[in-house]
Image (spheres, rainbow, N blue to C red):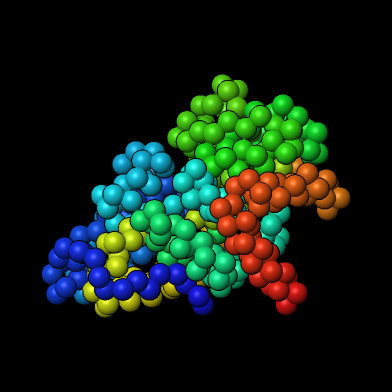
Length: 338
Ligand code: 6CS
């Protein structure tokens, strides 16, 4: 497994890791108790405490405890928090290349295969990591929270159904571009405002993995869920670069080993939650949601519209002429051929 971030031992890590003194670290997530990111951070903290014989105490923060997703990015960069689960969908204005995850139909349809690519990709774990490091963010791993689906107040089966459709997105500009390619009107906002915005019709639809749709109750204020599998929700386990590089080698090793172990754990966790919440949504008689399954032919129509967005990424977004995308596409082709 090629997981990112080895880091030297330099930096001024303060009292971090030089001896056996207690370590108090803050770990912020974009989700709340029960949801995948939060449960990940809790499990991570538990394992670190055990491995360090109680030396490492990690305080885990639910989403909202320390502000919005964008506030959390700044807190990690400044070192106010040491660790964060971060979605590339909120850092696109800063780390342009990270918007690679906004491209629809790029990764394989299989979530498992996608996770394998996220584990081993050099394009992501070396080249993209370097781009984040320029902003004091070191991604230690990339992992999927599951395939994303669309929920909507009107039925979505063809790109034409997106015409002038008010779609909520995260803030990265390429996510907006991906929906403009279908003719939609994307509106970026934090998920904390989303339930009310859907309820009031300020926006008419959104994308997320099924567990998140169910747990955040978005289906209560939507009539349809289209099983589009148009993309995977990718999250990153990140650390403040200087802080991590200043830790003792032993602590760095403990963190990277734990991050590596967690890849399998989080894959199973998202799988379980996505399966469970599909049943919850299907069986919620008080808030009925029509599940729309797209045929391969119907998906093909979306794929055609999504293709030019890759050129847009190469020509207008990438600062390295799309080199990371080219490399990743090769890695994906190789994985698909296996
Ligand atoms: O839609 C969002 O913005 C949220 N979705 C997930 C799956 N996690 C956190 C994120 O902020």
